[in-house]
View 1 (cartoon, one colour):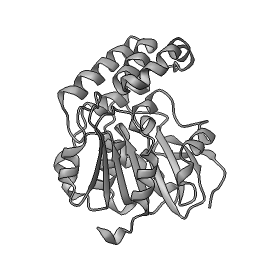
View 2: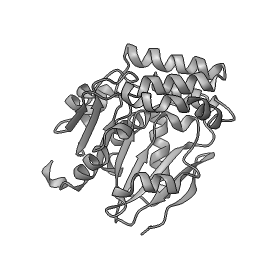
View 3: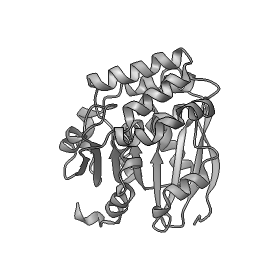
Amino acid sequence: MRNKASGGRVPVGNSAMEYISFGRGSQPLVMIPGLSDGLRTVKGTASQMARMFRCFAHSHTVYMLSRPNELPDVYSTRAMAADYAVAMQQLDITQADVFGISQGGMIAQWLAIDHPQLVRKLVLAVTLSRQNNTVQTVVRRWIAMAEQNDYARLFIDTMETSFTEAYLKKMRWLYPLLTRMGKPNSMHRLIIQAHSCITHDAHEQLHTITCPTFVIGAGEDKVVGTDGTEIAAEIAGSQQLIYEKLGHMPQTEAKDFNAQLVQFFAKHTEER
């Protein structure tokens, strides 16, 4: 069992996926990040993520995996899920608790649909199962900014769309610094992943998910345009939590977010 935070790379097809791992628990927990993975992978973030999610370190061995380093020009969320399944098998993960957030939640849906044997419990946070006007408008706007290589405007728009006003009041003074620090060498990876968000549609297959599922949404989500209610309605017996006054980043703004996940994962599978 792992204890110290570490990083690695696992071969998938003609490419490889960066991953980080930490924790000493016997149960694997696979975390699938959102669209920010298009700007930078998890490489080099092991210590930071281990601190952020230290609440899981006793019960789980945590794996956070990026998308492959080399992406095809057309790469659907379903194809991404297939690559995650290969990576899990390469890492000898036979059955994991899976936590997918935003685009990661889209991928996690397909993982549970197409590879149910790999998923013990499932958390889908601030995500969607089919298209709506909000996600189409927002993500297409981000794609246009990325195609113009305008990282500063993209960063600020992402912040302003994702967080509440109360949080933004504390952060806006940092925009000049943050927009200079984080610019990637290329926007191509982000653009490919963003296109997968605006073509994702797993809604008609959600009813096939049978593992215990926890759907977390936000009442003021201006990115995916839904609080997750329609996802929860399609997955029999699923549990739902809605942060009514928060936006697309409850994992940052809600103090009890991680505790909610810990409680869900600790429940006996027999309850379902």
